[in-house]
Length: 94
Image 1 (cartoon, rainbow, N blue to C red):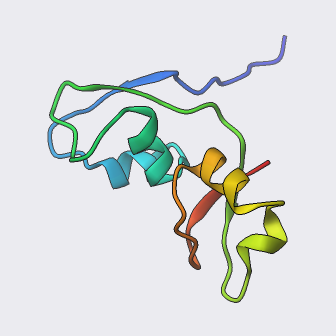
Image 2 (image 1 turned 90 degrees about the vertical axis):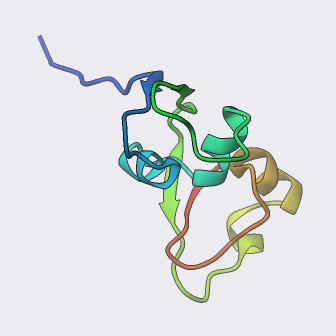
């Protein structure tokens, strides 16, 4: 029998945790995590966050263009929940 670790679907925010830190730990795009949970500010302790479905996570490198990784700006926005695109950003690929 092969042991398979599964990523949780929900996460309860603990004291001192920021959305940025949570996004980093679960390899989720920050804007997407905020969008899925309808957040406009930092979540409070005890807030239960829905973690977006795991997809192909990619770390943007310097000089890369959004148009080279995605068919359209609309697709990028739909998948990642933001128009922002910069080096060292984690994005989901289609």
